[in-house]
Image (cartoon, rainbow, N blue to C red; front, side):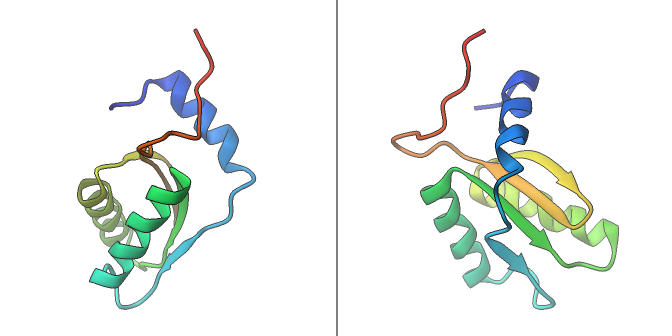
Length: 98
């Protein structure tokens, strides 16, 4: 399921109108937070998350853990915001043809 650059560019264009659906606070990646992220990906396919970790290394580690545990693709990170994509069983987002 790896996305190519053209697909990522398309998804980044869609991200402009999306607000963060999950905010990861001081408690970090709890089981409930991961459940919410999985539910958001299943419902929306493309989600934006706010990762409130002070340390950049800790933030990157959380983002990587989310990517691995949700089996999703990281679309982009800007500051404390990370965006992920995982196609639904019946995909809603379509990619333009070549």
